[in-house]
Image 1 (cartoon, helix red, strand yellow):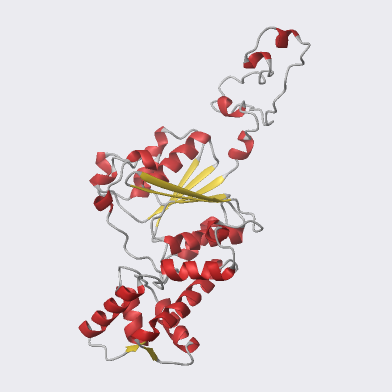
Image 2 (cartoon, one colour):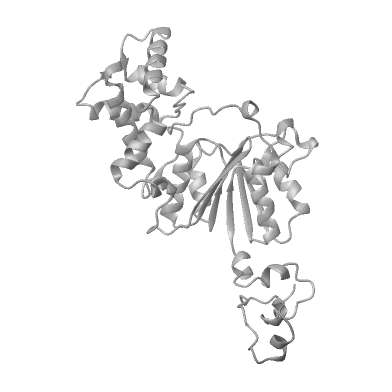
Length: 342
């Protein structure tokens, strides 16, 4: 209801021969004051920051993936900033142990859906933003994630599904040319990654690789077991085949193993069997592998998965359950608290 100023403040300095300049050495004697305050403007202290574009902030639609400790703090901060719209997505419910670090929940919310509790409790902090919630599994409903992202100006990724999930969201942001911020925390630590949406700039996934082969090698080692983990993957595959009475490491065996192995893969959905068949075709038309050739199979698997996730293809997928998203170490094993989330 107020006519707020929309001009971005620029620093204006007092001339050296002015009375203000000669009156002292404080900031007020060097820099001219901001425009007069508009009564009732709750965002005045943001508008007077030199270079701060409150008008731009108030036009932003923000996609918050995950309403855990980080996602809720992001949503709360966005509401205080005064963005136009906040869309929160999650598929989880509140546990009692979540409440110490997930600021938009209360004891009464234990057992309830996180997005519902966050939407209800953010009302006390919301100044002008529209709030929308989506309660879905992001892996199984990737097409819905894409649909929402197309309407947004920035993506905040706080879903903890492993590095290949982060790759999916970063690739999506790169194709849509919108900024992407990812955060994670546990124990005493936190990590934040930022990509500005410019397709000419490298995202975090490529920034440290000097050549394409460096990048491929890093993905092999980190996400598909072609490093020190290969020995243990062979042991688990052999034990799995024996337990489930598979006579060979054929397409059926490998598909079931990739779905069942929680340590490295935990791949799921209808695409896994198609990817396995594709890998065997690339291996000179083989119909099965053996332990000695497992590195070749996993290499083909990595290429098949990553090719689907690249910009230009990532928005065409209906689901991304096929990405490796191994079960991470239980939060209680390492601990978590509110400060890294903040």
